[in-house]
Length: 302
Image (cartoon, rainbow, N blue to C red):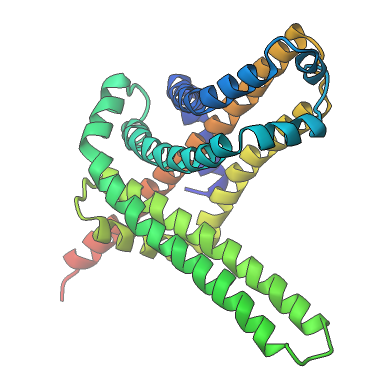
């Protein structure tokens, strides 16, 4: 299977499973609403029915924000902690849902909510172990390339009057950090594909298979990852531009803005799921080819 075919297959699979994309978006909205509710209550209590509330409906006020921060300092400190916990909860939720999604895309056309629920029940704990191991790898990437690498460059060029070497090496460090994060993400996703397709229980074994597959076909794997990932970035960019320039001067325009924003977020989730579907199909096609080749070699006479 070629890269273009894998991308096309992944996009088609995600489009057919629109109900699955909607589940991911709905869960995200419910969690975001739960987190935003205390902030909404605090702002509503602070504004009441004052004229400031009407002014904020037509534009942002930095003076009001400063006043709100001073009046609700304790609440904002607690709210920042709540956001961190919400991020962890979202990571767990994404792990739960991805277990079902990988099962659906592995089963192919015709997979239903039954396959989604079966995947969650069967693979969640395995995916959770992968998430924990992957978090360690992400930490190492940032610790080595961002923390140690940044301080190392500052120490190496502390007495150097030439800025160009430090500048280019620093950009190289950031490029390596980005590439390493991509590599870890791809290994984890192909490890999930290996775990579901071959029903592997061991997270370390699946990681080994995923790493061997990714680094054996790094260019192709990266092309699939980046091509569909850029579609998601494009959806986010369109969302940012729309949010920046679309006027929100009335209840109707706010509602229109919300609907358009959710449509763009829906497409962003579709591209995310399309990436998983493409990787599953790409992994299945080439791992099957590898298995057939190995079987042929074993059958050859000595």
